[in-house]
Image (tube, rainbow, N blue to C red; front, side, top):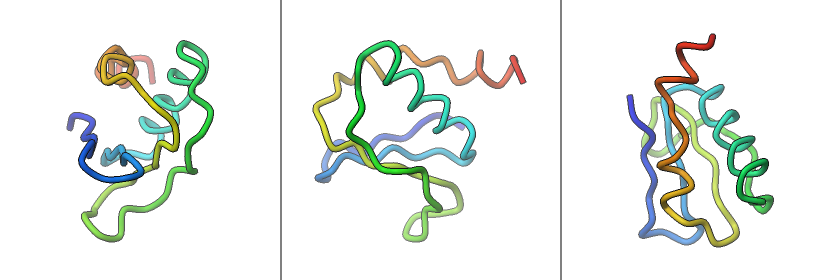
Length: 76
């Protein structure tokens, strides 16, 4: 499953079926792009199954697109 980002809500929400993928994305955004204002990863109770976190600062969509979910899953 691909990452799903809801850009139409405030704050922006980022969704995936696996919690560890979102945690790796958070590290990528922090280490590569300085994104620090975000929520913790939590269970998606509205649109689940899966998990989500919220971004509380501006984030270029290309930063999220540059995170390779398939590569992360291969490295496990």
